[in-house]
Length: 340
Image (cartoon, rainbow, N blue to C red; front, side, top):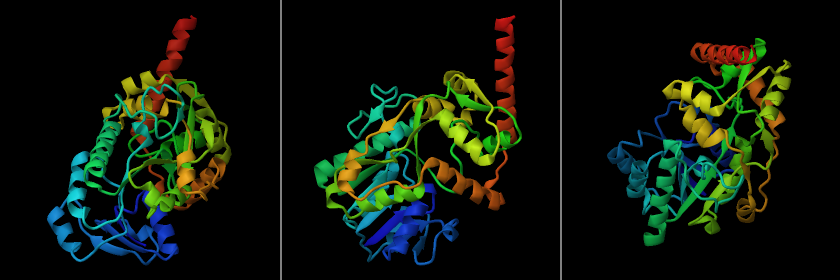
């Protein structure tokens, strides 16, 4: 199989790229070449900015592909560009959308591909919905061979998942745990969440590549393991060998008092504060051998081992740390006033 990935070195796409190369497929990547060192040898690199459409078109002359997948398209205009570039060059175009596009608030915590798409809290999700609608219109009217993939919270060995974090990622949450500080959990920690290790995600994704039954379909790819946020943070603390000291704070309050650049309104109210349980029947029908094998407790230990061995993953975030201290202090002071 000859595949072209736009991106190819992110959290999700690195695992897919690596597995494809290990299986002997012909993989091409269009990216700026800043992170290609994370891949094993063998990929064909087209070094270019995908937004420079004229240059990319010139470099693609003479090429056709079995599959083209765009991992970094976020708005419909980028998909319009992709359509111009690849409408005659691929047998399948895969768009990576997002499970955050599903209806918020949910009318049923069980989610499948028939769950309505609507998210008034998060522009990111609304843009993904618009992208899906654009591509499905092309499929219905012109036969453009699109497959839509909806990941939920997928993580890798480079980062431990967290419900609330700042602009530098989740490492500061780990630091707070290791320093014996309280950590913020949104709500009461009992909402349900699904986490998928990126190597497990890759199995499902590759099973859809070149799969004629996936054309014209939207498919979610997640694991079947569902945890509460209390369980998620407890597992992380246990892997660190420390005691978890949670501070439960309303998601609405967190969204209202956080810096706009963190977009907690979208990330919490439009995503993580909602209980989600995914029904993966459709994926397993299309990819019968799909099964996840990395439990969350195993994935966390993989990630912590990698992070400890790679200082570049230890991104401290003083702004987030100080914000946590202020939020926790404010809540404790409010409790004192109420209980006085």
